[in-house]
Length: 229
Image 1 (cartoon, rainbow, N blue to C red):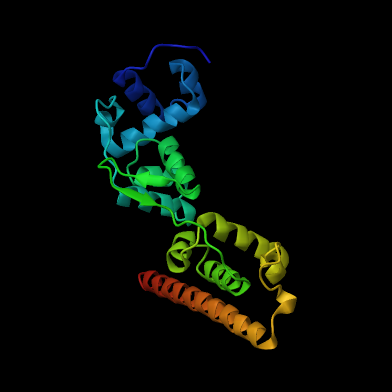
Image 2: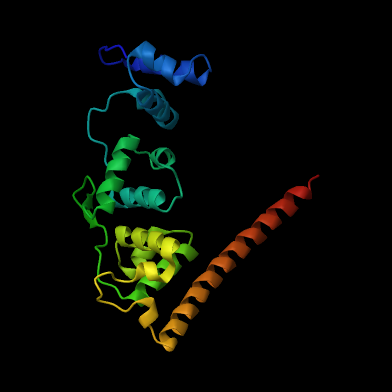
């Protein structure tokens, strides 16, 4: 890719307009202006959010609150939006910045706002086999909403992600403590197994209720639109 000096606002604007008009694709524009495809994508996103002004170089730091950062991060972790979608929706300057927040958050680092307030991700804690099963079932039943699970059970993202993966691979035995500090699935009493089975069924039942509610709403919408035809 040819090296060139920093692009002017006018050049950025012309590149965006050429793409939106279908006159050139991102790789072609990247070669023309001496930038990579991601940069062209960034210009387009900024223009779509803030118009011509969005293409201007910022003279000051953009302010982001802890709440705004948390919302964007949770949207990524729960799968609500992709990285690019969340960048647009939460009006974040670049997807690189959002990716940096997510990385810090999932590694347990403090998330700070530009007004110096802080928020730290929930730290991991010791759990029993029974807790890990309940937490895993809750996560699956709530469509892998890691943020909700973290808040309810006060465990870390890394713990939840690891337990869900192990449970899907090996079932309950995948959740046992390999250091031998907790009971294995075989060591549980019949009463304990029954209790866990009840929790599992409750979680599955909650998930089915949610699915049925969504299906019912979809049917209502379809019926509404059919009434016009």
